[in-house]
Length: 34
Image (cartoon, rainbow, N blue to C red; front, side, top):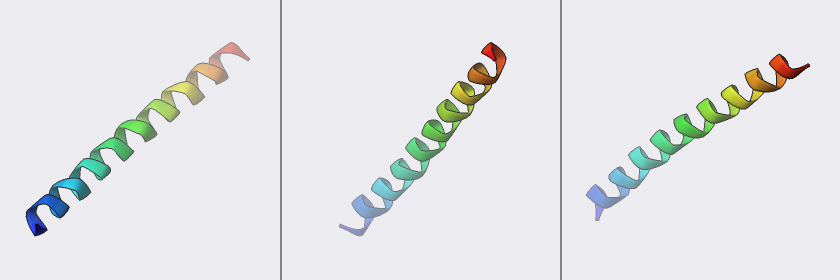
């Protein structure tokens, strides 16, 4: 059970990083259009 929880936590960290990266890209793109 603990292993599954650790795996989920790692997945959350990874998805959070990817989400943050996507937000950063959108932010940069918006600045370019202005």
